[in-house]
Amino acid sequence: MSKTLFEKIAAREIPAEIVYEDDKVLAFRDINPQAPTHILIVPKMPIPRIAEAEAGDNELLGHLLLKAAEVAENEDLKSDGYRLVINNGRNGGESVPHLHVHILGGRALKWPPG
Ligand code: 5GP
Image (cartoon, rainbow, N blue to C red; front, side):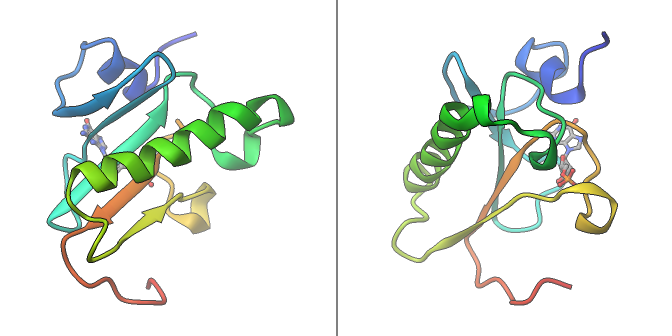
């Protein structure tokens, strides 16, 4: 099967500014930032979207969220706050079919999203 865009970033086939990596997850700056800090954190295993995750992904998903919080803290977002977003499917605004959590911070974010 062909690699997803984010697998290509993990394989260094497409350049990105990587801010965190371990054996399970990769975090890199979004190419089209929607906030002063906009990072995507992805599992290296290409789960297409959260709706396709399974019980066996439990540990990986926990790791992904904990690392998202760690990356946010390392980006100095903890005191002022930040938002984690997962877009799922067409109405959710998903454009890359490889599960990713957006880490958005550095400005006050509106609620609800448009
Ligand atoms: P989605 O809309 O699927 O929730 O988010 C996909 C995100 O991937 C978008 O915020 C988009 O800007 C980002 N993105 C798309 N292509 C690239 C790329 O080649 N490099 C990086 N770093 N981000 C990308």
